[in-house]
Image 1: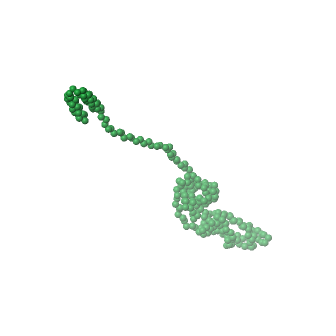
Image 2: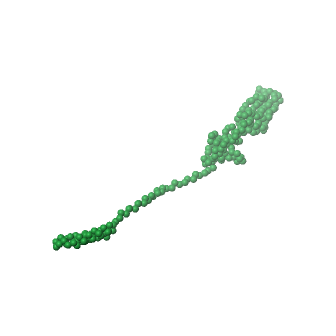
Image 3: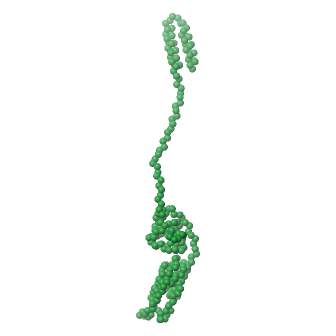
Length: 253
């Protein structure tokens, strides 16, 4: 580009030096040519501004930071079962299992397992490795019960009649009423059963009364004939059958 401008200036100067006569317009022409040359040289010396691309702006992303959510660690406490009413503690979660003993109202025992299907809780008992199962209907759960594992129900056993009661003591007193002789009888026995439905008392082969589970005594006054032989029998029973004590025999002379 600069070469073309220089060539143009040379031609212009050459044209200016050609004599045109004595006409005063020569001077004007020379002045105009000089002005044009000066402007052209100024343009040559002025640096050409190139089109420089603008820098691409950098996008700065500011990450919003909020208040961190605190991590809550739950507090653990031993799961416990508080007995509200007397409750049988069994070898398994159901009434088909043997009764080990009865938990009294107000007792508190540690829970080590659960059987949600029947609402039974396996509890830890002192001196026993296997758990004892208590029904949750008459109990209140406290502590971290969500940590308690679900246990499988133990295998059931074929029900059997309860063991026969043992005679602890018996007494009889022969007397006389206005209508004739009578006898006062007192019977006491050892309750050896844990799954009984009740007790039956027999006199001379006839059932005279039925008592609830865990009973251990009975007494009555009955009219007798002089010299009559008396025989008493104590029977314990459940759904599988019954067992009887040894007979008690006496007579009033």
